[in-house]
Length: 205
Image (cartoon, rainbow, N blue to C red; front, side):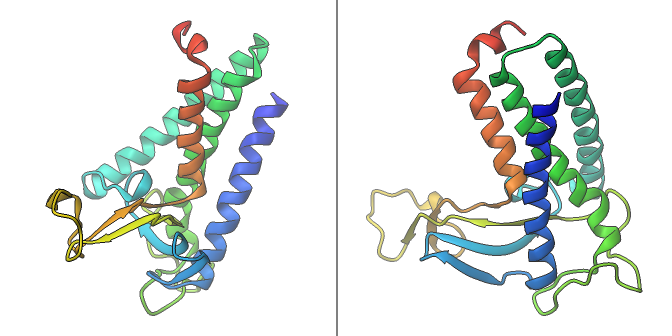
């Protein structure tokens, strides 16, 4: 069980350290160019699912948080079973990444509303504010910051064969438009790892 714990710990450490820094040093919408125009640290928050997707308002958010907690408990139990059966490291690695990512976003939803003041376009959040946090337990916002606009096309100068529905309200087609975090990356990487490299394991489940 040591290796899954190490994987989860490393992902959570990186995820939460970056989120804490962003939350306490940047305002909503603030950007830092990391590698030209194709990799940007862009601070935003979301109330819902991975990659900034939303889910049925406050009740949906609460349901999603509870589901994440139950799913994480199930994954912990499953990892314990796999390690006791001495399962190969590949499946354990993939599931550990998914678990780490789920826990990373659970921490935001569960506690960030309690320990931070609200972030805005003009003010940086305060850690453990005297007046209390901006939301109740399980109603905190998930911090996102990784933005990779690898391809940007202005609709005004775009070739006619590109469908208009691909352009956003801002008039641009951007690949990749969603802003995400390390936890989202861990979940996606874990799922892809299982689908691409652990098909035999998945078929035997």
